[in-house]
Length: 74
Image (cartoon, one colour):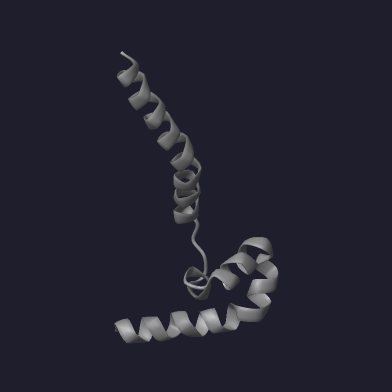
């Protein structure tokens, strides 16, 4: 009987450890960051903390990137 409780505690521990990480990943996946901020952690943090500052610094490059991708897909 104590063997069953050991498995329960291990399972509970695993759920409690991985739940916040999984929740954070799900929330981040729902976000729709600009193209340059998708793959760059520094730009993603800037975009999350101050979207206006990100737009001032990298907005034009994002527009050029999206325009180039549209032309490429034609």
